[in-house]
Image (cartoon, rainbow, N blue to C red; front, side, top):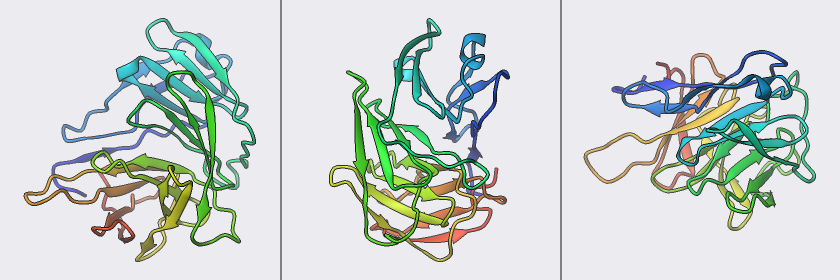
Length: 238
């Protein structure tokens, strides 16, 4: 466990016609979630959600279903747009964790495939979709789907985790590339990812990446160039 921090993982998985709690996966020093919003009936009656993210700053809720992503206005509870993801592939959760959905610093939404190394970026202004077909520096012969995404708040670096392979990736969306982070051992579970920035008295340190889905929760402590990491069992336990 990391002193002074409580880790909260809220993973929304498939649930058909049942009440849904929308919440942002959060890490806070006070141990409280950043957002907690009860979903209105019209959301859950029609949408069996794979993942949900709430952007409190922009009053938006993004709901990922198996056919598209749905953007809602939080205040009015109305659907803003149904957004299809061209070429999006996913495998059933019996074989892998669900694809992930995260919100970037600009408010853009990012969606993964859990079977291919692709990321779909949805512009927060005009809601257009851009597909990033990542070129990997390793494991090109494997099905590298990403089941967890997280931005490092300090550097803006995007990380992804693959539940099927237990691998961690440092992603550059400007070049559409990703390099495999060398780990002391593979990460377990990998059904979600959270980047924790720990305050240090010296210069800013790389984030600790917490792996949702592993029990006890694995944590990855990255080195200064974020190309290697030490995997520690239970490092992100509350």
